[in-house]
Image (cartoon, rainbow, N blue to C red; front, side):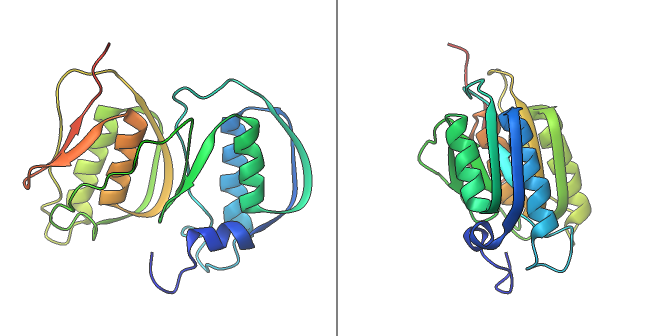
Length: 204
């Protein structure tokens, strides 16, 4: 995020939703509504691509509850809190996105490998992708977007439990994007200096 751009918490406080009405909505539907409306009403960024707020929903262990709300002139952050509480979830405001999950492990940031923080993805969207599909996309696109065309090496340790990855992000560094992929797939993310390594959780 450049110094000229507002911080994410500031956007959550300043973006006002004129109306928000749900009747028996799922948390997925509510989060998608907030994502779309945040871009529509974000007046701080001139570009519609980079505007708004990115939300990441980790559906693992999420309660299957419905959300019914009827609100007017509500700050985006307050609307988010109401939706998340109604679904029995929690949220965390990161530098690039808002993460929504049932619980959070202590945040761990592996060392930045090479220029992973400098490789910026203008847009990244996965809907129910496998971990392998998400990593292959990151690997290939990192080579396309890297000025040296080297990209970043990413490995997945064999075995482990399969997981789906759903993301919709804008202007995201590769290092941050990979961290979110690791969170959603419940992988431990490390690096040996040559590659990022994803260690999937093992079946119990």
